[in-house]
Amino acid sequence: MTSVSSDPTEPVAADRILLGVNTFGDAGLDAEGNPKEHAQVLRELLEEAKLADAVGIHAFGVGEHHRRDFAVSAPEVFLAAAAAVTSRIRLGSAVTVLSSDDPIRVFQRFATVDALSNGRAEVMLGRGSFIESFPLFGLDLADYEVLFEEKLELFDKVRAQKPVHWEGRTRPNVNGLQAYPKLQHHLLPAWIGVGGTPESVLRCAEYGYPIIFAIIGGEPRRFAPLVNLYREAMAKYGHPMRQIATHSPGFIADTDDAAREELFPHWLEQRNRIGAERGWGPGNRAEFDAMCGPEGALYVGSPETVAQKIALLKRNLGVDRFDLKYSNGTLPHQSMMRCIELYGTEVAPRVAELLASA
Image (cartoon, rainbow, N blue to C red; front, top):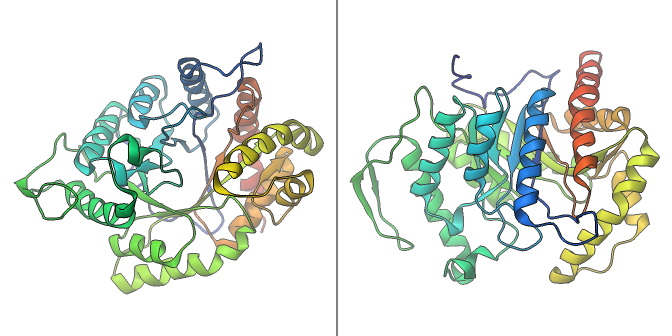
């Protein structure tokens, strides 16, 4: 078996978009209506990764969290297991919370996944929108910004696979040491996930990394100024252009009505649970339906509806990749499996047709 492309983050053609999926390993309910054990969620998650590979989806990502409602706290361990039961799909985090981890260990763990997957690993780095990892690992939230900035700088030096010389205040200095294992044929593909601030976009461009925008509310087309800022900044820093991606929640069923009716109660439960933590008002059906519309941030509906919406995203933003967060709170495993199947077998070819004829 030959290794995959040594540069998987090159931009794609104007009439093409790569389609990935990601999940946080949402801990749903069992047949009796009780919260599933995390062990069961993780085993079901492996089935979802296998199916995504079988139906030809480009990438599978798992997000790191440290709370009861999400089962994935160690993405690399899960991805190593997924590497053994898949053959084509790219395997990555969505995201790795670099601020509360050690950059050298992050590199080493993903380098190991890369070896086990024959060059299919990628890491998405971010600060994370949840803060549970900070007290868990004894970190001060007052250092939120500096932790990410310093650790990203160190990660970038380690990723180059050369002896590292680094000084900072958030961890001991590194004086001429090197991290192992080395990747065989390429540098570790490393993305930066951003929530939508110009400062985050410019930081990503400074390092020359591909970027992924988390679009979970509002209208995706309103991200056009940030997409353009990234392109301009990459040119300013003298970096070759890298892929631009977006991530949004969604759900696919046989019809629009079936998709909306099945997803809504699970979406509402999760939205209100997390919203209560963050001071949001309660959600409602009108908000949900608006987000499911052609200009909204939820990719929910029949394969045709979702394909049309992804094609619109490509036309509006010119992105290279779209990742669908297919899990949502207590949505059942079998429903997510059906969503993945439709995404790979019906949405992907239809998107290709729409873009080819545009």
